[in-house]
Length: 460
Image (cartoon, rainbow, N blue to C red):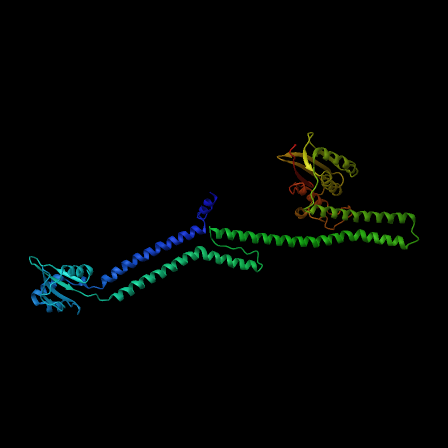
């Protein structure tokens, strides 16, 4: 059954197989038309070889009676090898002119029939009224059978050549030209121009091949762009790491050198320098730890060990741990978390880290007398977490890149806040590992609003 379907599919409405079938049928019909026209042309050509249409046989007969056969022959300007015969009803020649048959020659009925019916164009017969005799005129053809053969053959060959040219033109438009377009396009693509698109009209398999090649080149171009972007990001990442490590390491080296080379420092100065060294060590260590965690999250083979957890309960624990810090920074807070459980399949520590990164950023950059708002709800098959504040917000230029590593909404790359610039990048990777999403709501104008979506487990 499947084989039958496959055979039928060869002749679906847009297949090359069907197109070839149509073309061959067209060629077959064209050959039949050529053969028909050849027969018609041959008939007309043979008919034109005789001058019977110009001869008035009744007039010839009267002239033979009035002037004799010789004079009648001359008056009608008959060809030299034509002849006249006057024959009775017994097929006996009574009189003749220019004929090879002598007077008294009698035709057999078979011979006469063959002569008259096998060469109907060459003989003309006139039967006078009330007489048992008739006039026979033989008019030879103006051309011989070699001329007929040459004409017929030439007509057929020329017609066949025209038909082949017409068929080749049709086939070229439908098959060959698209193939040439594909070959030219592939040549350009092989030279490295992946932006080139192959364009031609076709609804058969060649059109499918065209679309497949265009799609392939589009993907290659996309891969090249991604590779170039990845390389650019790698270089920028190295520069950012170098920049962010340089300051704390320089401070550590400088103050350590001062402590090592100076003997007249007071205890208070030494303690201050040690605090600076410790702070910068922690900053460098935090950066390295964040880089390590981000690298782990970017490893595709790294699979998180998830468990089914009540997300509402987890959020309450996270928020309680940040209340002292919110109050210390004179920030108000409002939490709207459902009383009923919302179950999700999560890695508890990673989700706590992701939510904590957003809250920490809000505390660092919002300033005093601002408000942190967190809401959780269910939408379709997802748990939705909204975290927003009434701080300074993020300018539009940073919205598209806010989740990339080392992006800070601070053009001076000020590190006084202690941030590494990797928190949101880590948060995004954590959400992706949970088959969730996070985005910055660019329509929110009173600060920052982050929206997180996590799939619900089957228990919910």
